[in-house]
Image (cartoon, rainbow, N blue to C red; front, side):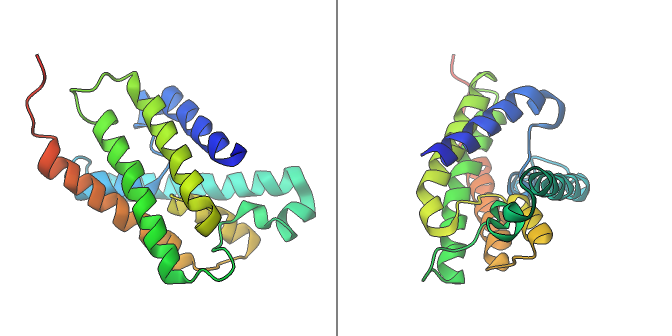
Amino acid sequence: MATPLAFGLALLVAVASIGHVSGGHVNPAVRIGLAAAGAFALRLVPAYVIGQVVGAILGALATWLTFGKPGRDEAALAATAPAPGVGGGTTFVVELLVTFVLVFVVVSVATDERVHPSLAPVAVGAALAVAVLIAGPVTGGSVNPARTLGPAVVAGDFSALWAYLLGPIVGGALAALLYHRFLAKGDKPA
């Protein structure tokens, strides 16, 4: 329970502190989803994604520096990997589904003017905590391509990497498209 809560609170803090600067997007699946839905300039996506991946690599290096050799060799810098007996296809589906929920929440509370801006950090942090709580035992609960790629690059552990990259991107794009196509066009409440 501590890990999902820590992830959710960390995202809550990030969104609350930098949301007004960059949108608080530390997850390429969110940025790519918004671009797919036409809610973010496609030309800016590469710069954001590169920044997110570089940040994840720097975070993995900081973890290695903090915990040393055991942190890298025994804990793989917290790189996500499927649970024993869980294949790449299952990892893809689970990551797609939990990222769909996360991005749906992000898009609904952070980009829709009908929602008060102060709600976004809490809702987004809670959505991540729930996603990690659900997916953690099966996939490690990445819900973020950069979060998987950073530790994977530094630790050299690329278990089911394709599923951790594609699942969240597809789930995020589907969530943003669904919200913007069917729900974002409603009238603002009086």
